[in-house]
Amino acid sequence: MVRTVRLTSSILDVTVDIDRGMEILSIRHIPTDTEVLMVTPWAEHALTLRPVPATYAAEASEAAWHASYAGGWQTLFPHAGSPEEVDGKMRHYHGEASIVPWVLDMASDLRLEAHVSLNSIPVRLDRVISLEDGSVQLEDRIENLGGTSIRYDYQSHPAFGAPFLERGCRISTDARTYVPHPNVDVGEFEPGVAVDWPNAESRFGETDLAAIPGHNSKTLRLGWLTDFTHRVVTISNPRTGLTADLSWSDPIRKYAWLWQDAGADTREPWNGRGYTTAIEPSTRTTVFEKQDSPVLNAECRVTFSTRLSLHTEKFAAKERAQ
Image (cartoon, rainbow, N blue to C red; front, side, top):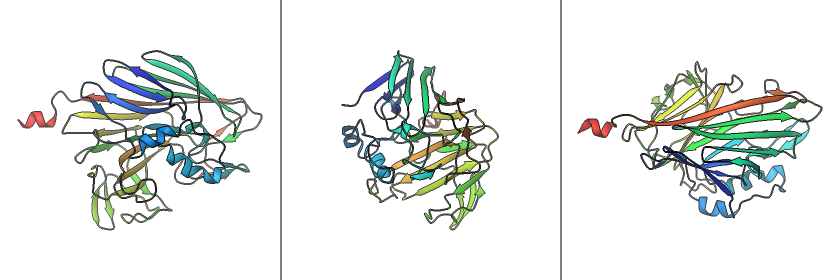
């Protein structure tokens, strides 16, 4: 059985799964009755697999992670991406903290507090998720309990989906550069070759990267945004007037992954059924940056804070057109 906690205000209804990484499963905007996060096509089955036993080998962790992935918003730590050897030990796909059960310390309508002590590295995470007006704030305090320094990844992983997401939505940010994944060629851009954001020259001509693709457009993008002035990325729906602002202040996360799938990923378990745009503030690019990755020294702490704010225009586009 899935153990969840709900946070509610007059504007937001938020569901958090205690047993899988303290992830945010759902964010519903009450005034418009709109779910803003993606729900995977296999979400119903994914929930039956929880809590996920953390006994599988790191090399087999990607399939296990996706099997129990129901969408939503995860925090990836101490690793993001494929299993990889770091400091002589293999780290699990998307990090241990994103999948193990947490301990719930306090919960009210507007705030919850939880913690977890990891097995793979001597680290404790203390998390606070809170609501304020139309905003969800997630704050992690990470403490190295060991006697040696630890290199790590930290990535927020909110994936947006329908009904909030649809053709006509747009991404706004002051990031100036988009870098396609250097190890994955999805056809649109030269892998690893930086292009201007948002008007980029692709293999097929000029492309407006800010335009959210439609449901069945067979679009697949995987890369990252960088060269930010302000660490804010906005997705807006001009038809409904609903806007989502994702912001973070720490200078360590100087990248934001962009993952888009509009029925193009045919691998298991997607099978061409996916529809999402994910914006993922991150300390890393595509491969573990052994020289440039953050280091958490012995008995030291670091804090990351990420905020998602939802709001509506006074008059939506469809109302102005009448």
